[in-house]
Length: 395
Ligand SMILES: [Zn+2]
Ligand SMILES: [Zn+2]
Ligand SMILES: [Zn+2]
Ligand SMILES: [Zn+2]
Image (cartoon, rainbow, N blue to C red; front, side, top):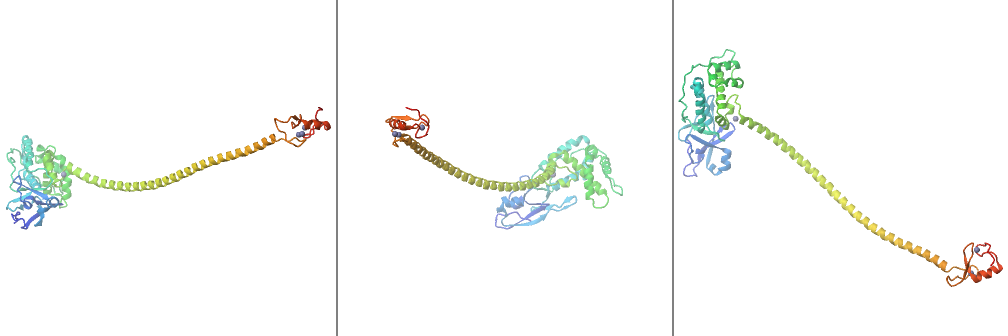
């Protein structure tokens, strides 16, 4: 017997950890002291969430494993601390539908006019079968209001035994028609192929037997019901029951899986991006190194150009100085020339000719200048110029 947490919180309590596939969860009524809002629904909390958000509730608790077990068509009921029994909502749902399909043959016997009304009523069971993240239990004696008041007035045929070598998809389609199911669900034969291939995969013997035909007929009807009642389909998906309906095309499962594939792709892309970032970083660092080198070079260049400028300035100075010194040399030349011109000698008396003071005579041939007195005296005894030896005219 499993006792709820008592007033004395130090008291160790035992809590069952239900295991179903990869899911691990506990009943909220066992771990918390709370009662569920809806009396026939027993909510659960996943072990991950329990330890993440309600760690204090895990003190003084002895957790014991409790795997959910199922016979082919029935889940093993779980006894509560109150003594009542419950099963997972998804198991309750499949048992409920199996009862409708095989027990009461509702879809074989339903008046075609009442089909929409009946399905509408089933759709109204969403208080019992609701879409929710975590699994939940339903009390075994939960009754579904209004599931009995429908009119039955059609021929009641049994599933026939297949031939010794089994049955084909066409045989299944024929059987669906034979059972009057094509009247209730005109689309039911569309599911035959997908359901048949699943039944064929799971068959225990080498040939398909009557029990396999029963399964195939059941799953074709399940497909019809779930495709017509999207809310129930969502419930089945949320309770991870999609794989239990042969050939069911669940859009949410289809999006879940590609999402996982996308996740994988995303992870690969992220890794590639990381690698790219790394190499990019490397390039940036190399560039930085290069730009540092370039900067250094530029600074060097700048220093050189400054030096160059300085040199240019120096050179300018030097050339100016040089020009000045040249000028002074020129001046010197000039002054010598000037002096020679100023201190020109008379070749006859060998004394200087003071320009502007002494009277001079030029030789018409060589243009040399002489003192006038000297030239007159010279010409008394000579007929040629003392400088150029050219003949001079008589005075
Ligand atoms: Zn699904
Ligand atoms: Zn002279
Ligand atoms: Zn003279
Ligand atoms: Zn002369």
